[in-house]
Length: 204
Ligand code: SF4
Image 1 (cartoon, rainbow, N blue to C red):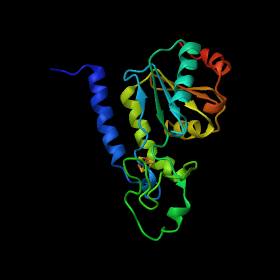
Image 2: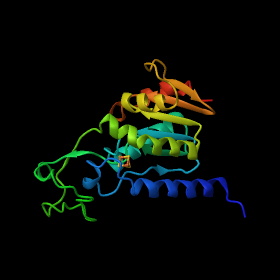
Image 3: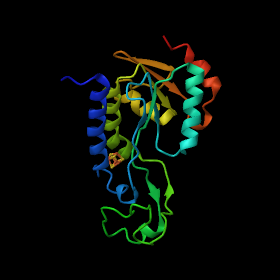
């Protein structure tokens, strides 16, 4: 029995997520990550939204998705991340940096060094971490094959567009790749109804 396109997407996304969860390419980051960030939403999306990292609360993501839903009149939305493991700075870890640990966070998000809740301060990923993680995002976009990809912020836009062969400075707000439209917008904290109006002209 052949699988429906949705079932096929689920199977391929689960396979990719297993590899994300077992990935340790960024050895300085993964010890302090309880679980890498995974995409969520409609598995046959019309629009796939890319954030830099999982720095927004669930409520903030919902609010943004609703702005897009209403502003662009698109229901089927999936959101995901440029990098899956959020780097942090932490004095407790700095003191033991000469040791290597596979994991320092338990299932309750407590630090194994201090016995208390993780107090690391999230910082942006460096370029090496972004490049290491990029294949997962490209695979995810290819599996879900959305009509539109919406890139939030300059950093996300620059890295993703380069992966799709656009190497020059970003001068447009919409690029095409195969059957997809890749749209560029402001950072998530500046996104509003106004940006939706600007993006509308790119919708078919
Ligand atoms: S950030 Fe991405 S590439 Fe780096 S360890 Fe996590 S999943 Fe792997």
